[in-house]
Length: 368
Ligand code: SF4
Image (cartoon, rainbow, N blue to C red; front, side):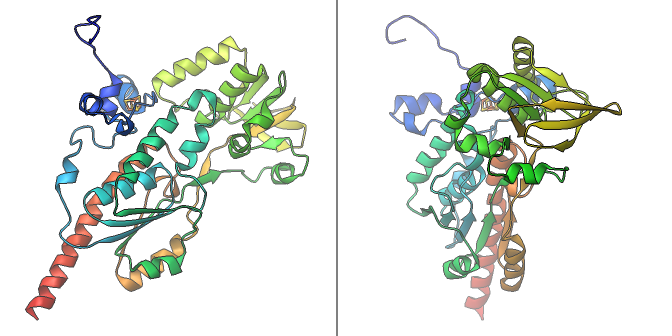
């Protein structure tokens, strides 16, 4: 527009993700832009495929936007957040923005959790835009302290004299009890991997023209397929128990992945179940028939499982002490970033209740 090359510039998803895009750019706050990550989950899929109102993976309140920031806390509320993924960061920032004193504990040396790990894949790197935005937002909040390389335990919680705990400890890849699987995955010369093995050391998986077998045709399995077909010229085979690969994906990603499956001639075995596995061969069952599939490397992408090892201890402690405890994101149930972001903002309802209870008890003490 400045060069007189356009009279109007229109944005689509960018404004759903960041309704303040124009103001932030105009006033030099580009680093605080909450960029659209092109997931198509809350916008295109909700609107076109499901007939639902538009929502957004990275913007937890498309309707109310920043309205929540006007509802400041009346009392000093200490909040402990366990985990440093996107749900944990969104919860920590939202609570700090209304005045809570927040301590976040992440046992790893970095923030962003699974979202940051997945962003190591070349076609997923935009997910890190969301992580970077959350980090930037957190860095501007003096009442939010981020403790990296620190595993929270009960001692930590007691020491903090916290009023509320938010557990957001994430999820781990699931390896079901299938014959040979655990042993083959644990072997020192293992060619049996999960998604974390790939993301931890992508460089180690760049050998070309390999025979790659992927067990599981959901979002993670398809991300692995995309990486090996596009970037490693691999011959890929996928095995899926359901009648269709990518069945639960959003409509746009589903079409995109279908194109890739066709383009790279990925062999697909649907309604097929893994029966047993060794370091070079998988035995699968299809319509009662047993088939043997050979591979150079196999990736087990059969979903994620919640990790919330501290929850039983926290539940006992919170009951004894009468403090609030909430479990959000993947540690509640392994799902997409979308659900974690929504739940993270919703913790503010509980924070306000804690605040009201504190006001009431101070009022009673005062009257007494
Ligand atoms: S739901 Fe995803 S694609 Fe849609 S606007 Fe939000 S971040 Fe962008």
